[in-house]
Length: 143
Image (cartoon, rainbow, N blue to C red; front, side, top):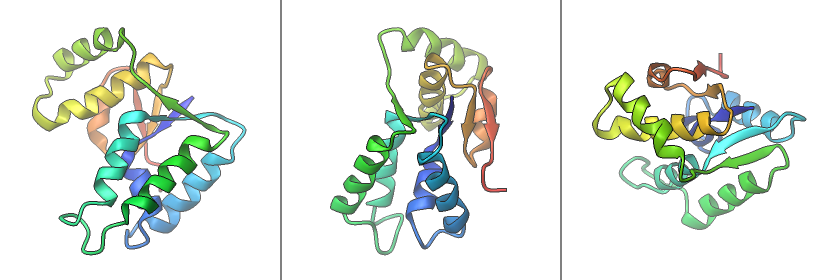
C-alpha cells in the first residue's frame, strides 16, 4: 500500500493551486483504484486546517466544504485511513533519533511512523523531507 500526503490532497482540492489539475487527476485515480491507498489521519486534520486557513488563502475553503471533502476521502473504497496505535511511538522515536528532526518537522516524522506501522513503503508527496525517514520512499505523483 502507498500513502498520500497532505500537500497532494490540498493541491487536488484547491483550484488556485498551480498543481491542481494533475493532483486532482492523481487523487481521483487513486480513489477509484483497485489498489488501496493510505491516508494518515493526521493528514486529514492538516488538510482541513490548511484549506480553511485565511492566513494561507485569500479565500479559504468553507469549513463545511472541507469537512465534506474529508468525508469523501474517508468513504472512498480504495482509501484506508491510517491511524496510530500504542506501538506508534516505538517507530516514531527511532525515526526522530536517526533523522535528527526537531520543531515542526516532527509532524512529518509522525506521519512517516504511522505509514511504516501500517505497511506503507511509498508516500506520494512533493515534500522531499520525507526522504529523511528510513524505510519510506518519496514519490512525486505529479511529474
